[in-house]
Amino acid sequence: MAIRMIDAREEAPPGLKRMRAVATGLLIAMAVLYLIARLAAPARPGFGFLRAFAEAAMVGGLADWFAVTALFRHPLGLPIPHTAIVPRNKDRIGETLAMFLRTNFLIPTVVARRMRPLDVAGAVARWLTDPPEEAGGRFRRGASKLVAQALEGLDPARLGGMVKAAVGQRLADTKIAPILGQLLGAAIAEGRHAPLLDGAIGWSANALAANDVLIRQIVHDRAGAVLRWTGLDEAVANRLIAGLQKLLADMAEHPDHPLRVRAEDGLASLAERLRTDPEMQARVEAMKDELIANPAMQRWLDGLWEQARGGLLKIARDPERAMRGPLGEVLRQIGDTLHRDRRLATTINRFVRRAVVGIAADYGDAIVRLVSETVRGWDARTITRRLENQVGRDLQYIRVNGTIVGGLVGLAIHVVDVAL
Image (tube, rainbow, N blue to C red; front, side, top):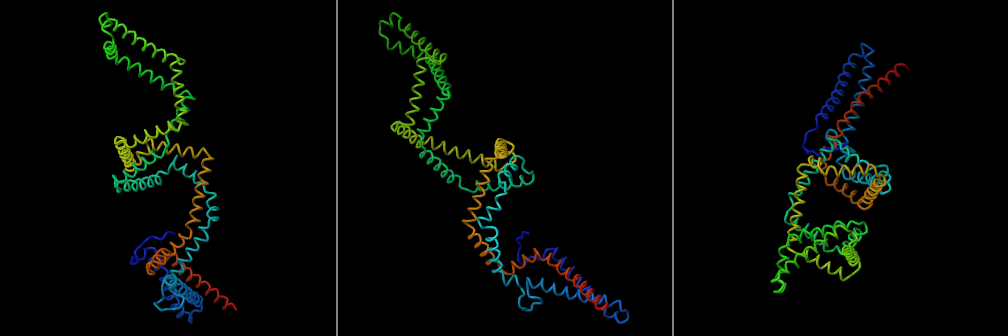
């Protein structure tokens, strides 16, 4: 039963008051019944049974009242030994509770045994694919509100600077030349470089058509006076442009064109040099460093963080809409993958189990100290009132049962005494 955090001066809950009144009223009723039976017993012997029941009920009720009251305070304010058990032994109770947690819950072997049957991955998969409407909604709203408040509370400039510095450092530490070489080599091996060559050829053809006048002007300027006087410069320009157009058309149409084959060989050589040539790698790294240091790149990183922050805030402020969009689809796909891929689910469950066991091994003693020191720091009256308000209603049933059971025992003893 969870203990609700309340003020020490707060009144007892209605349920506790009601059961306390019932138990006390039953005890008073037994006292009145005893007086009536005592007065009537000389004239009517049958009232002796009623008297025995009421007398024993009073004894049982008073004994249980004393036992219940002694847990939390001195009965009638008298300093009777072994009373006010909770406030007097508050620190020992805290230590005992802490050791109970340590012995029964925080031992690595116990944690591992309790975690073994848990299917964390399966629970996550079910929640992602078909989340409970109410529980999932509460969780999303609470988590989203927390994320939104955290993002809005942090200094955007400082946080953005930290993110930019982290991304920049990550880029600077990454050796991109071998990565580029591997990507280019894989693309060539799988034939995925062909669209790149087709694009380059198409771009060259478009550039040639767009600069027709410029090429003709260059030929005219470079030609001699005789060629210009005879008009042969125009013929040379036409032949040059037509030849280049045919060359580009042949390269686009025939994959085995010699120039295209040489271009592919050049790409393969470049991929190999990117992977193995230190000089080439150093040149690529220098270009990368210059790119990172470029103010335009720094502005792009700033904008990237602002876009990411804005997107996170948008999702956090409207989680239901986000869950209906691409993010929700991604999460559902993750849940479906966890549901179908038992090897992945087993790996996740093993990781969670080891993580929890590791936490128990590394922080078990710290958790025990935390519990013990927390209870020790509580005010005795506060913890007494909290415990009484939480379990007092059930303890009042003990008084009621004690009164009734005591009366029945007294009645049985009286019956046996009369019979003998």
